[in-house]
Every structure is written in structure tokens, then in C-alpha cells.
Length: 388
Image (tube, one colour):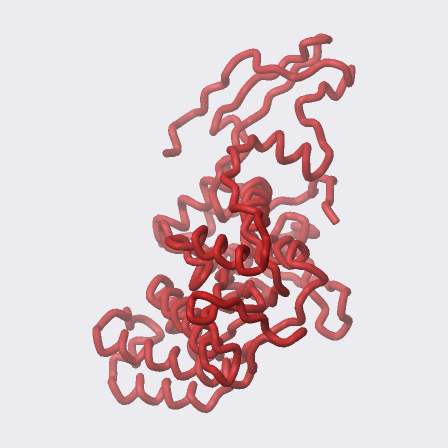
């Protein structure tokens, strides 16, 4: 359900009041903070709107469009969902999640790009190889992966959500469906994934691709790094394979909630009082219920910034049959094999106003005073500086 009420407290309010507490941050962290603080304010400029039927006027400020901003993900998410709807295959869809043991977190936190690349590579290869095995599906599959780096309490918890069609191409000429409500053996996925993760990290270490400093400087010792891998090898690398949804549209919409999600939304914030942030988290002891967690404002900001991604890092990736290079060709082939004539359409670019009207039935161009006129641009308001 979509919440139409405006949150009383926003992440921007916290950074506006307390960002001076932060010191020695990476450049991308400061850029994210400034974007969140300036979003939909006079700093970024905007437009003065006037009703063409009555005297009503209002100012609409520009969004920052930063992917870490809690206010700027709705339109991007809806566009992603609609594009994926056009690419649906005639089968069940599964939601598969790959997680890692806590022992790897300190290493990954200080090597985000290299570690997240390893996570994507290991998880996607695991899915494709296990599916290709004749003992399982025996076919080439496709999948879409979405990187998340947080848990409900905002601590670092890197994991990947995959949406996986329940079938694949066999020898590029036959469509093979998986068994009803069953994709691949989870225990096999877990073991293969563990082996690949450890192999890739060992290779990255030997090729000097990892930064080992601060609290993990001890890992510069080959024996210490080997001990870390041995310790992880004894752990379970948990893989969840969730039951398919009622239809592919439902799973796309569900995963759409993951694609453009950030560490915490404004709607989870409860209050800011005496330098303490209260926010909602899931109550593990009461499924479907939430409870309130409290953090000092400094710790809250620190945890939020743990999840700022490296510049330009792609956190939504397509693999196998759904890989971008041959995706349209392979989707067309699969549909033909299943007697479906729908083609992958190229969607026209939609404005955020159009998307909001279609999804939430809200006409933002309608005058809120007379309800008859339309708000039209009267003049442009220039921002205080160029944020490009």
C-alpha cells in the first residue's frame, strides 16, 4: 500500500542539524549528504507555478536525483518495474537471496567495489552453473540481481536479491520449465556459492586487489588471510529460495521494492529528540510487527553512510538470458517457443507527473485551490549553485 502522507521527520532534517558532527569523510559521502540536504529546496532551484484558472501560485523545487536520497527513488522504481513487465517470460518467477558470513564484513566494508563485484560474480555464476547441470534444470537461465548492503538496524549486511525465471533454454532451441514451486537445490547453491566466494577472494588477495589497512591490516599476513578463509569455509553461506508468487507481475512488483530501496526510508523515522534518532525496525519475535530502535544521531549518520556506494557503481545487474547484449533476441526466441507473439516494446520516456498520476491516481498538475485549472510554469527559479 502506498502511503500518501508526508513524513514528519526526514533524513535530510538529521543531516541539516548534525552533519557538522562528521569528519574525515570520503568525497562521495559528502556529495550524498549535500544532495540529501538540498533536495527540493531553493538551493537546487525550481519553477514558480501558476493556475491558469484562478490566482493560486506555488513554488516547486527540483529534486537532487541522488540514488541515496530517500525522496528521489519512486519515479526511477516505477520506470524499472514497467520495463521489466515488458520482458516477462511465460513461467513462474523465484526470489533467491545470497548472504555472507559476518567474518567477511570488515574486509568487504573497506573494499566495497572489489568485494561487491566478487559477490555479484560468485552468486550469478552459481545460479547459472547449478541450473546448467543435467541433474537439475539442464538449461541456460537468466536472472536479475539487486545489491543490498544493510540490515534493518542499518549495520553493514551485504547480500544480493535475485529474480529468477523458473525455466531456461536447452541447447538454444528448447524451453525447459522447472518443477512446480521448485527452482534449484538450495544446499547445492550454498556450497557452490561458498566455494566461489572464497576462491575469488583468494585470487583478489594474491593479485593485490584488496586494501588491507586499519583494523584489517593484520590480513596482510598470508597466514592470517588464509586463516580467515578457513574460518569462513566452516560457515554456512545461507541461500534463500522463496516460493514463486501468484504470477510474474507480482514478483516483479515485489522485487521492484528492492531495486531502488535505500538503507532507510523517511517513513521509518519516528522522532529526533535529545540527539537520539528513533526509527522502526522489524520485530523478529512478532512477524509482521515493528518495534522502535534508538541510536545517537552520530551513530545513525555513520550507519547510514556505510551504504553509500562507490561512484558509478551499478547495483542492478542482468545475467544469462536476461543479460543486456542478447536479451531481446533470447526473450523473442523463448516467447516463440511458447507460442507467444508479444514483442519486447521500447517504452517512451514518461514524466514523473505522468507516472504519479498513473500509479497513485494523483494529478499533481491540478490546482489544489479551485480543482478546475492546471498549474503551468510561470517562471524558472535558478538554484544557488550548479550541483553537476
